[in-house]
Length: 431
Image 1 (cartoon, one colour):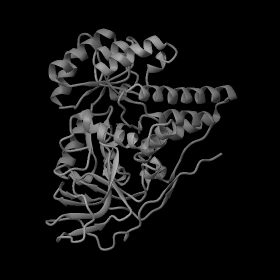
Image 2 (cartoon, rainbow, N blue to C red):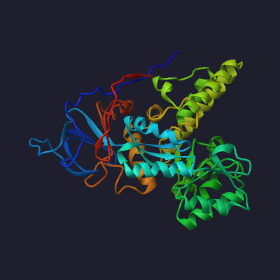
Image 3 (tube, helix red, strand yellow):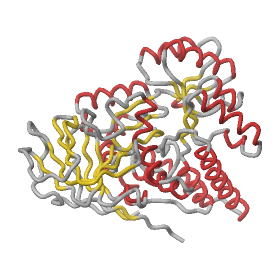
Image 4 (cartoon, rainbow, N blue to C red):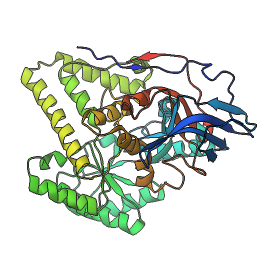
């Protein structure tokens, strides 16, 4: 049965006559602040934005408003910090910057790029430095670090005992934010990476190599584990699972489960290809790749056993994710856009949040995972992750309460990036 998802995109004129903030800033009156840090909703607040910062917050219903370029009546609406997609691949092609406005319209004001080009990464960073309102903040790894014969040759830096220091030094000079490790790194190379990041006060994140165990990766200080890669190996061994959790917590490791990719794999196995309206506007190279996957899958003979196998894996991933949540491993939300077919920029992060709710994680915790946790992960809590005086005005206003149902994160009324209102188109997209 075909699934229909509806995202209402605000029609122009909802806030009639509003203009971009200039010298006198923005005032948002009578709005409910979602305090993700303390899991509470604070009603009837007035937020004053000056430049790119939150200048003041009044925690009472405002009766008198001082002059401002833009006054927003937030009655009946909810405001929270901008969302982060902590697993994307957008820095592999310069014209992918055309997706920046798309991401902002979905409320995503920060991303972590998990493998691409360091040159493109730095060009995007420079663009955003020059015009912070043009797109989400980006932290990136540059090329993926993999073994001598990498899985993804086009976007990887092959490492050997002879070149590992040279490659890491090169990426360090390119000012990548962290290193992305992958599946075919020999243990001695992973050891070298772990030693290097300790020396340079950096971090590494990604897949667990086939040549080490998840427990060893945690012991070496891998900062985040993506897609539950290799962690599935622990699911039937409670002793190893407990040992991994103990080590991961002691090393302050994080988990980015990307459940949406396993949902998509199970759909593809049933020959269900998720193609919302946004599909037609995607990068041509991506569409060609996805069309080829679709063609190959449609021509392949599938059995009920094939479909059951992918669905079982999806179910197992959900159970394992819930287990890690229950045992205190901190989470990040990510979609794996451009790493997995039929995953969509912006929208699929909201899918991921809905899946976390489906496995029983409370909406307040999901909101914290998608907003505050990235700031904690990157050490940015002075400026991001909550709505407080002096913090960056990267904000999302919602028409409905996401604590009642996390799917209300899709009911976006307005996005503010670095103190300016993000323009919205007039379309209503049905997914």
